[in-house]
Length: 392
Image 1: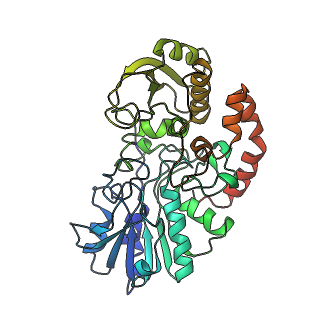
Image 2: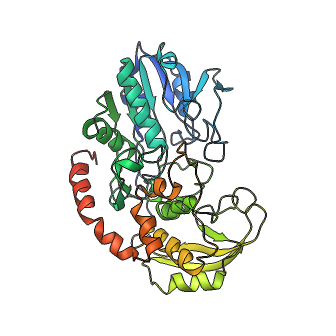
Image 3: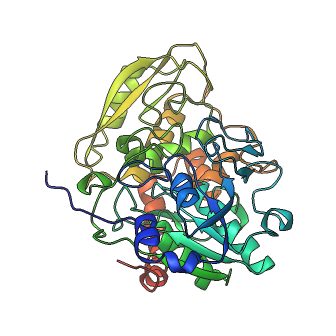
C-alpha cells in the first residue's frame, strides 16, 4: 500500500511558522504521542529550538509520558527529567490551567493525537485550556494531527447537554469525523470559547485517510489504545466502560476483547454474528485480565475482528454488543456504578453515551436500529455545523 506523505502541524510550526513563537514565553500541552516523523518529542524540539522560550509543560490524562493507566488516577505535578521544565497536570485537582500556571506564559501550544471519538478526554483538555487562555489573556496554537479513523465518517448520537462531562462537553456525535484542529475551531467559534486561537494545519492529509494510509507516526496516545485496531473499535466498545463487563483492559487487546465470567463465549458470539453486522466477525474466546475489572478471573466473551473497516459501524456494533449481553444475562448484567471521570451523581453509561435514552431503550427491549433512526435529524444538523469548521 502506498502511503501518502503528510506534514504534521508540529513540523509546520517549527519549520515554517516559528516566528509566531518568537519573543513569547511558551507552555506546551503534550504527551508521549507528540512526536514528529523521526519520533522526536515536541517538548525536546521546542526546548532545543534557539528561537523558542519553552517555560512549562502540561500533561493530560495518563500523564505526559502515558504511564498512568486508569480513569481518575490523578497525575502529579512534577518536573520533566529530559528538559528540566515543570510539568503541570491537567488531570489532577484541576483539569484546566490555573492563573498561577499561566502567569509567566504568553502562548499555549497544544499538540496531541486524538482517536476520532467524542468519548476521549484530550479534546476537552484542549477546550479547557482554550477557556483558561481566554480568561487570562493568552494565545492558543493547536498543531493539527490526523483523525486516525478517517475524517469522513460521522456516526452515533449527539451528546445531550444534561450529560456533559470530561468525556463529552459539547453537542457532538460519538464519531465526529474531525481533527483536533477542526474541533478547536468548532469549540471556539460555534460553542463560544472565543479565545485567541491559531490552528497550524497539516499538509497532505485528506479526509478519507486512515492513519496507516499516511506516513504519519503512530505512538499509542493512551495506554489502552495501543494500535489503530484499538482506535477503530473504540467508538463502540468504549460503552462497556459503563458496564461491569471487561472492555479488555489488562489484556493485550483492550477494547477488542469484551466479556465477563458469566458469559458463555459461544452463545454470545453466535448471537452477535447472527445480526450480520457489516464488516465485522465476533470470535468467541476466553481471556483473563491482569488488572482492572475481573482481574485474574477468566472471562467468556468475544474478540472483535474487523473484516472491512470502511463498512464497519463501530457505534452500532458496540451498542448491539451491550444489548445482546444485557438480554442474554439479565440476572448477571450490571451497569457500572458511579463515579466515572469526576461525575459522581449520574449513571456512568449515560455519561459515556451522552444520553440516558440508550440505556433506557436497552432496558425496555427497544431495538438499536430504532435508536439509530432517532439520531438522524441531530446528525444532519451537526454535519451542517461541522461543514463550516473543516480544514481539509
